[in-house]
Image 1 (cartoon, helix red, strand yellow):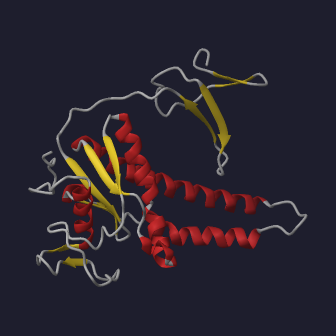
Image 2 (cartoon, rainbow, N blue to C red; image 1 turned 135 degrees about the horizontal axis):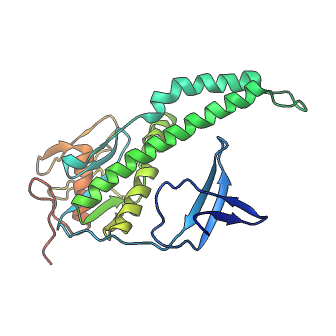
Image 3 (cartoon, rainbow, N blue to C red; image 1 turned 45 degrees about the vertical axis):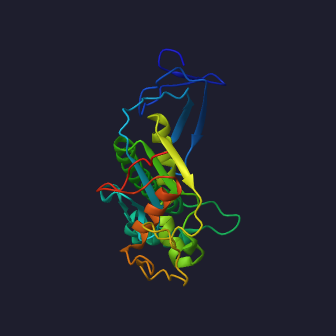
Length: 259
């Protein structure tokens, strides 16, 4: 970097359009071109921690399909945004255009074919950006208001079913997880993983485990021992806190356990 210009091998000099200022001088850069045809420069810089004041609050997170994230606090639940479903009709139209205009083997691609592929790539990029933006905004809210976040280590087992897997992919659970880890690291917050076994079958109130299988259609958890009734995903989020040594109490359902 010299005079706000990027000097590349081969005598290539470009002036980047900055999405944000670099916090420190970069150590390396990766230049690449995306499917739309835009060029990007990804800089590697040392991580900068912007510590936030401790709040003394923790939150349990249960990843699901009906809602992307269900937490022990009603204010931090992440509903399913369905960005992919919203764009599905337009995406199908572009894909049909690509299929119709696909050149035969040995023939050059037509202008219409290249345009259809570009439109498809632009729509895919838009949906990915929407998912990332939704995840980052939610993660920022969680990190600012809580000191520690806990979630189970695996995604829902129902992802083996094609319909549920498609909906989970649209929910972009991985993007939300990645955003939470990155923003928590940036602000000095702690993120813990909890073993997922039986988190949907245990009772957060008394610790009893159901003796019968719980189908996915059953969204209410009813304990046969203590009689507590709560939404199934909410109960799972509270079980995650209990397994981490924290007792869900009060309105926020979060308070550090006494040692």
